[in-house]
Structure formats: C-alpha cells, structure tokens
Length: 341
Image (tube, rainbow, N blue to C red; front, side):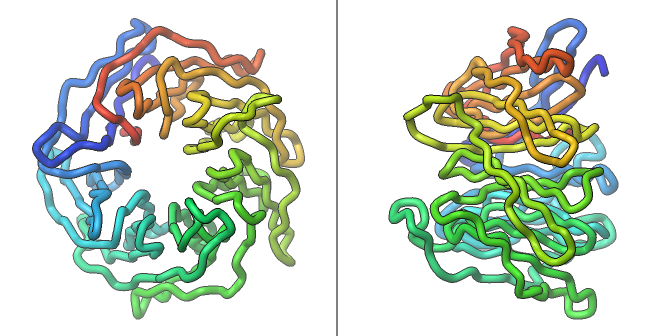
C-alpha cells in the first residue's frame, strides 16, 4: 500500500479543531492533514463505519458525555446525531449486525447501548449496564471504570479497569437489550484491563492489555471456561518507572501484536507463537511523548502522541522484528485516537 487515509481524534474544546482527516504517503515519506472539524468537545475515540459512511465520535465530557454521528459521504462533516450516554465515554464499538452501537463510559462505570437506524445513525439508547464495586488500587480503582467493548461470535466482551474484570453479554434482539451470561473473566487484582482483541485464526485465544500492570494477558477459552495462559510485560527488562499502558493491535495476518506504553513513550512488538502466546521482539520510542493510540497499515505504525502533540510514523520489519523511525511527523494538538478510513 502506497498511501493511507485516517481520522485523528483529540482533546480539544468545541471551539477548536478537534477531528482531523490525514493522509500518509509511504512512498514519498509525506504525512499531511488537510481537513478538520470543530464543534465537538474531546472526541477522544472515533469509529468509522465503512458500510454506512458514518463516523462515530465520543464527547469525553463530565458530568455527561455524548455519542455523535457524522455523515461524511459527501466529503464534509454533517452531524446527524448527538445523544447523551454517560460520564467520560472513552470507546465505541458495533455489534456484528451493525444494528447497535456501544459506548464505554469510564467515569460513570457503565456501558450504553444505542439502536441504529438503516443509515447507521444512533436514534435512541435502549440499554445501560451499570457496573458496581471497586478494585485494590485506591487511586485508579475507586469504582468501576468501563473502558472497552468488542463482539466475538455473538458475545459482547466488556473490560472494566476498575474491577479487573471482563463481563460478557448477548443481545436480546426483540427488547434491544443486553443479557449477561453471568460468567465474568477475572484478571489479577490491580492489573486494570483496558482493551482486548481476539486472534483471527487461533481458536479461543484472546489478548488483554492491562493499563496498571503494563502487561498483556493471553487468555484461552477451551470451551469449559477461560484461563490466563501467559502474562508478559510491554516494558523493557529492569524498567522501574510509572506504568501506563494504552492501546494494543494485532497485525492483519495475526503473526504480530503491538502495544503502546504512554509512560515509556514506546511501542512494543511481539511475535505470536504457534500456541498463541507471545515473545517480545522489539521496543522502540515512537519519536513522540505519551502514545495513547496507534494504527497498523501493512508494515507501518501510525502513532498518536498526546503529550508531544504530534502524529509519527514507524516501520516494522517482520523478518528482523525491529521497529524503526521513518521521520514522518505532523503536529496536532493532543491527538489521542486514530481511525483508519
């Protein structure tokens, strides 16, 4: 692939530019952002629905955030919806049928469910699942902090950083609500599960990035239940500083997994072994500070560095396992999310 387009979400006020459309030309080594949008506060997570041409964005606000939908098929931002969802929403996902949109609300500790019309626009909230309890970390786990959701084979998995759990739900299509299967997955106390992903080919293998422990937990579902088969750090050996893990992505072929660490300003590359467990191949600074999110495009890594206020591009060599800097960089205020187009 010679080039790629993507959206960038950021921390910004409604009066400032907050969503950007960018293009990276890998062949020429040029990164540009030519289109932007204002009128939305703190769109810190974006989700692009290729089938409907709708771009979803959270407004990560307190005490009440919202979910917004933009029709971008005509090359402009046309806001179609803005629905209240909960305190500080931080993630969005769709169900397999693309009839429902889910918003993870970090500060209120709940998951909101929205019904979508035929054009993919959210029209109303049909369910909200409140989590209860707290974890062992008094600063970061003083209550539930729902952070992420993803659907696999009709089951919605929901991570809670505050409770060290992954809840599982199915959808009741008639009532447009969620039903708990009552079988939560429990992570080690104080680990803080943030995001998860499923291996596309290795049956029953799931990866969970834990923000507070800066580890990847490899979980296997053998049909009788889920068990952790490996925990592996995303930090260098001997690291003693703060731990602040962020995003995690699998390569399209499932051979490599990547994770970002904001405190170490780095991306870690893992090789996926035959049994689904991981082996560290390389750890490299992104060239920026506090990489919160990133995207994979072939053998390139596009990183959003929140603290240094820039987008940087790295390259990964699948033969040597090494990450290298390309020199491509673009300045954006507080970028925190990248959504490929």
